Image 1 (cartoon, rainbow, N blue to C red):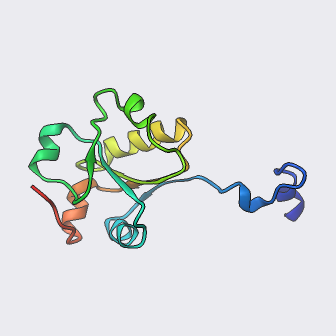
Image 2 (cartoon, rainbow, N blue to C red):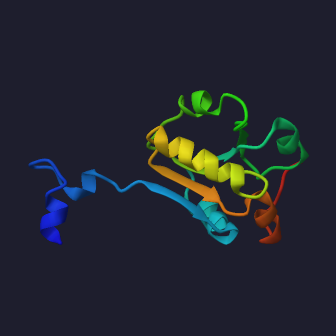
Length: 126
C-alpha cells in the first residue's frame, strides 16, 4: 500500500502536501459541529433569494444555483472550507458537484437541507 501512495507523488513531495479533497454530504448534526469547529467556514445557501429571505442559517451568503452559480462561486478561494445547503438537499448536491468540478477541495453539502437543519435544532435567521 505504501508503494501505491508513494507512486502518486512527485519526487521529493510528501503525501501531506496533496490533501485529499473533501466533497461530501453530511448530516445536520455534523453540520452544526462543523460550524462550531471551523471559524473560517463559509456557508452558502444555494436557494432562490426569496427562499433565503424567508429564513437561512446564520452567517450564510446566498448564491442562487439557478442563476450564474458557477461564475459566482468561481471567484471564491478553492482551498477554503464551504458548507452548502438548499431546502431539501437536492440542489445542494448539484452545487457540490459543480464546485467539485471547478476544483474546490473542501465542500460539505447539508443532507436534507435547511429542513433537516431545523429538525436538528439549528437556528434560522429571518
